[in-house]
Amino acid sequence: MRQLNSFQNAIFLIGALLMVAGAGMSMLAWKAAPYVFSVGALGFVSMQVLQRYEGTNFVIRRLRRIMLLSDFLFLLSAFLMIANIRNFLGVDHITYIEYVYNKWVVTLLIAAILQLYSTHRISHELEKEAKKL
Image: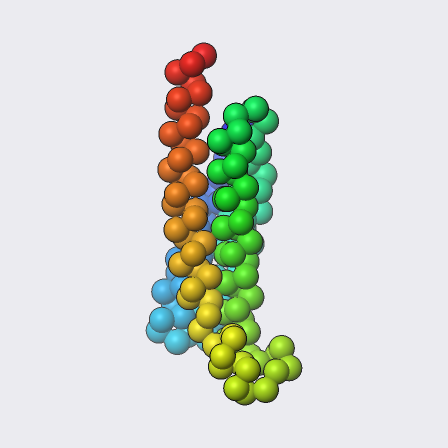
């Protein structure tokens, strides 16, 4: 995996902290929570996309695709958080409640589980690959 420099690593960590803070603030019904989460998600996802794998290990490539899927779900969660406070999608109230209202929690949970799994497995596979060399 390509390593991030110190500035990119700081953006990555600050983005993760902002995501956690935004999710926690939304439980307290703060109006700025979706925006804090969105900024954090953009920072986190953009730095994670920069971490590329140039090797040929199929397992790591597959896990990397799973990680990119979780990144997409983080961004979808941010979109749904913002849509949760403003019905800017132009749908009627019943459809809004059925498909948008608080659905960001589900996408965030799925993204977090996929992120934990892929991160753990990638580190394990990289250690295995390093032992072979």
